[in-house]
Image (cartoon, rainbow, N blue to C red):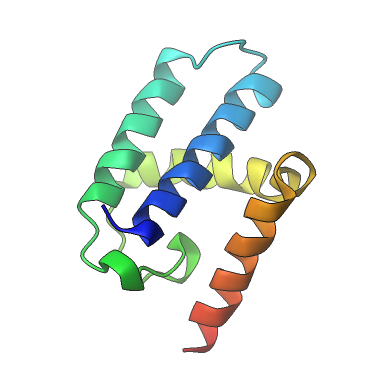
Amino acid sequence: MNDRIAEEKITVSLMIHMYCRHKEGNRELCPDCTGLLAYALDRLDRCKYSDNKPTCRNCTVHCYNSMMRARIRKVMRWAGPRIILHHPARAIKHLIREIRNHRL
């Protein structure tokens, strides 16, 4: 597995865990969030861009089905602004990558 995909897996995992714990009030991942995480990780494993993968917001290929896309969007909208408080280095790195990829 390449570094870019591994980084994305960590970021999406952190966001889903934060959402499930803080927004839904669960100590452990609930079955819905576990399924979403498994789906997201599978989609990342199958990403055709590999090391050149843009952030999901800037990606031209929507690899999630519509139901899962709506769920991950909800998670990212909630967790995105909050991740900087819990994982500042990861959040800054993700933002830099998003800005850099958006310009290309």
